[in-house]
Image (tube, rainbow, N blue to C red; front, side, top):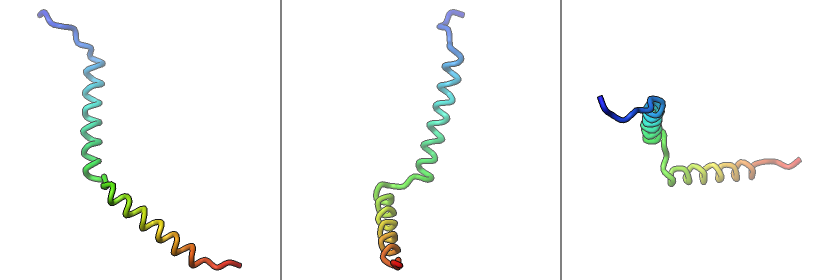
Length: 59
């Protein structure tokens, strides 16, 4: 059995890192929004706030 030594900690950490990356990619597909969707939501929020502030009464 002549082989190179294997660092088990490195193997364990590499495996955990790969699993975490796969989970992150899966969540990005499931929950991610495109840039245009984000900017549309931001514009709608700003418009709503402007309209709401316009309805305020000054004492």
